[in-house]
Image 1 (tube, rainbow, N blue to C red):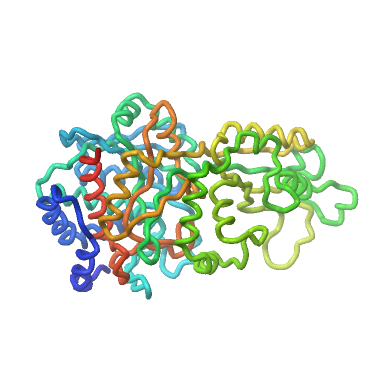
Image 2: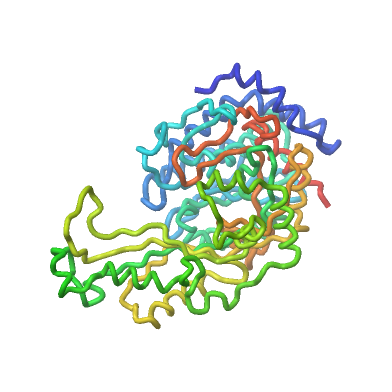
Length: 500
């Protein structure tokens, strides 16, 4: 349970963290910060309740409930219009807040979370706990804590502060949310391109996804884009192949009966080169854009400013691909498309052996795409590649994906992020793109065509992993806690209102 006394002890450090702001903000900023501090227990309780409404798209579990709960949060935070947007999959949300301002800022939310194995967690993943974590301070542990409900709830806490002080926001807001981000957003384009949403988005100066962008020592990084994903399954079955068994049979029959499992393994082997990592799908590199001189410069700066040993330790690896040096590995991370096997499922997986010849095998994969690849091109190439090599019987189920995204370095939202991070004592570095993905290309490409990025102070980790957490009260002076993260969004909105 949240301890208000420990929060008060940390409040002075959090206030000092805030740094300098533009003089024009000073008179309105102080009462907003006071309101955020006063309401912190309620804000954390709100986050805890949100985590209790998970919404797992991959399992179609409690999605409608999660959507409705999120809509209630938006109404409570001051959005005047909040509407559910139907899709061919999970519903979306469209919300607006008209402050009578000259400029409008877009906000992207996701209300779904990744799957969990409760046995791997130290506390129940959907019963969020506030715990002391050495080296970090007080943190909230739960699925969605940092990806993305913690940062998103900090943004809502900023809006509650405006309500509590009776102040108008310096910008208008347009918010779109989806419940399928964790399955590669297969229907998000239906939300963004519905007429009312599209018209509202086109009025925005840019759009952000609230994030926790600080590193363990308080450093920040602004990503100017992200790779695009294509998520799919490859399924080999005796029934579809016309060879091998329709179901599991005794393994002794393999002397005269074909194996759908080996069939799948052979198909998988064609997707990458002998090195085990370079994509070998026909046409995969036809449109790949190499790094620009500026992107190489940014990566070199990041390599010099970051800790290679720390990252290796965090990932549990000893070497990078080809034993490459740090800078080269970071170039690869930003520039190389990938074909990754997430999981393989076939036959008996329990203790001991079962001596069966399985009739079905499935591989779960995802690819990461770089400029100028496209999702549609990647899917077309994948299907054609398997067909050409005689694997037309392998079923290809593409379940989600979208294009890579890029935003110009001089875009208003990027310059506003730089200004806020710098004022907060967390001067940022620029990165060409994230190796991960979010559907920013839905915004940066026509018909929306606005800049898109990620922004937020604060720290958390464990996304997609057990014991995911988000820092509530930071024990690291340069890392913002929850209140500091909320105040960062206040500063960002003011910066967006005035930056040239």
